[in-house]
Length: 150
Image (cartoon, rainbow, N blue to C red; front, side, top):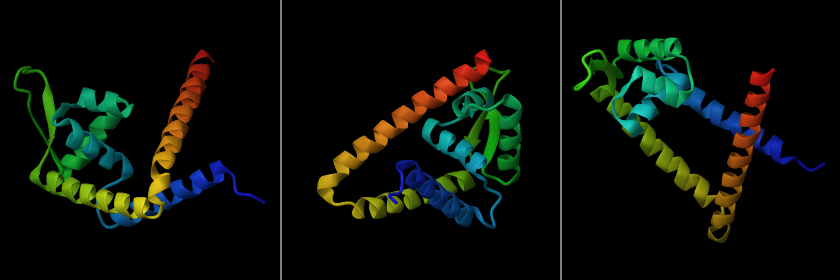
């Protein structure tokens, strides 16, 4: 019997999860905490409200994530330069080092995965992945809308 696309994608998801579990073992990092770090690395200092919106989580959830990251020295809260009521979350030098290491690891993995595919197939692979992402986003959005209409 032929393995379905969904089964193959689930296998990839499982392998990525196992790799993340291995990478985070012995650290205070979790998938959710790393998502905050990635957002800060890409966007720069942000308010907790902005982080919560970017990650589609509640303000209470982001507060807990930032508290844990701050406790372990990955982020710090600083005064907002133009809004004295707001606080910005920013990477510490430790957080910047961790993100630089993760970016290097991602670049290495990207090269390894690209090397597994014949150069003449890379464009088609990327187009296929983009199409799957777009379709999944549409399906998830429709499911969320249906759930809200209830």
